[in-house]
Length: 158
Image 1 (cartoon, rainbow, N blue to C red):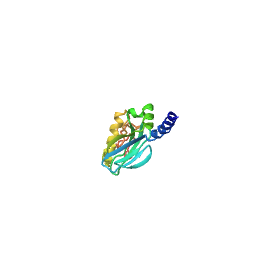
Image 2: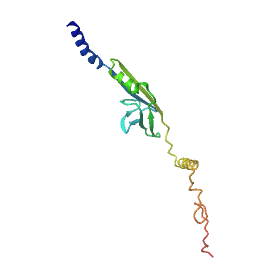
Image 3: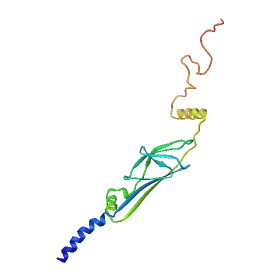
């Protein structure tokens, strides 16, 4: 009878102890300069520095914007984490231990260049590198370069 009470006590205690397991997963996003607005997977989460809890490991879409600075848009992978594998993840959830997995991302923003002529020059260089045609160097259908005043038509003074 006493053995039955012990077994019954263990059957009740084990699920109660298993409920105490806690896994906290957080992404900490910082930027230079601080105070940039952050969107994670198309959801606004706050201004840097900011911490956001997450439930799954993988790649997240990140957008960081601040007035006067170029926006940073792109995928942010978490990288491989042992804690993210199915068996380990499940064990951490049910064991009576508390864990905290912190992923840190830092982004250095680039000042915005509002010089229109510099923008056109960068676009021209990128177009040339990509194998495109520079519209400034392309010839018109009549053989003259665009932007010149030469013409093959007879002058009105003749």
